[in-house]
Image 1 (tube, rainbow, N blue to C red):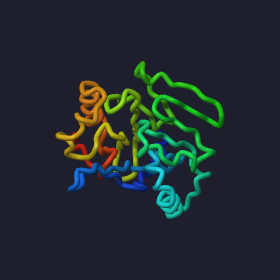
Image 2 (image 1 turned 90 degrees about the horizontal axis):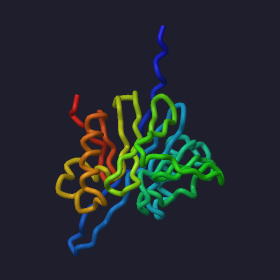
Image 3 (image 1 turned 180 degrees about the vertical axis):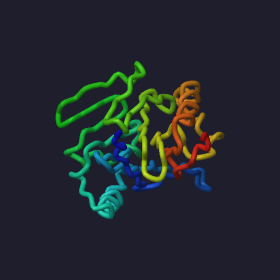
Image 4 (image 1 turned 90 degrees about the vertical axis):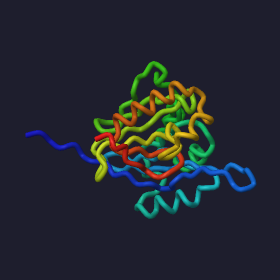
Length: 200
């Protein structure tokens, strides 16, 4: 008899946003996502001024920073990497770089290679917004099915008139957006609420 895979739970610690003020000032902050199950993972850590909010949200889930196994940052912009220092015991994957303690390595995401955490969680290359973007694919997530946490590959749902101006490679990003929409039941974008892909 086949054993059912252990499911992961997806929780949004902070929902990101991006908008332009009336005075023309652009304001933005990245979404931070908690994935709990066999491993405990944070994807993107918000801006440096979010420290207290991150700590409170973790506490609400009964977790301390030392409980986190992996911190994955989808890319290196400050509103996605601002609180790495809160998690000194975690293994860090930031773009293409991997650090465990003071052990440093690069993974060949450029060659299209995935990084497998376990049977249900993979980190996949999704360049476009930056050349080193990655996304986290979670299979069998409770309530949602397959979820992809993709940073700024998608700014938000219905971002069709926004993402191109922020892209380092529009063609690559367009291709990877299409790929993620085919893979995922739900997408967690960099600056908005989780949305259903409606590709079922």
